[in-house]
Length: 141
Image (cartoon, rainbow, N blue to C red; front, side):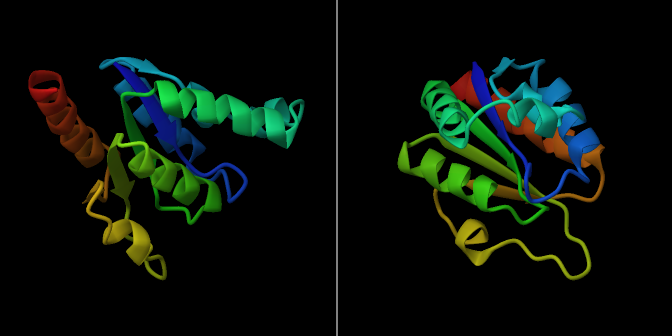
């Protein structure tokens, strides 16, 4: 299974450690095409690429992916775009959201019938939910 993980990059890297943890977890179910999203040096590495190169690379990965896991707590235009693209391409999309004071998930994401949203407080909760969803996907396709 090929998994596209989406998390905030230019919108803020405060959750980079969480992304790394979720990516490590997802690697137990398949190949995470976007494992770099959890790297501390991501911004420096992507600084070596043009924006067009990043777009083309990510679009290729999205097309190859069997499913998309997005962490949507940090509001990000890129993550929203990736979710919309995945839904448009008919991908299975799982969106994680950690409720915090003053932060709400966009209604365009929360209300989208083309994806499943899960609110969690601790990473272990997110991993449990993902395990259930991914095992269901593996069993039922």
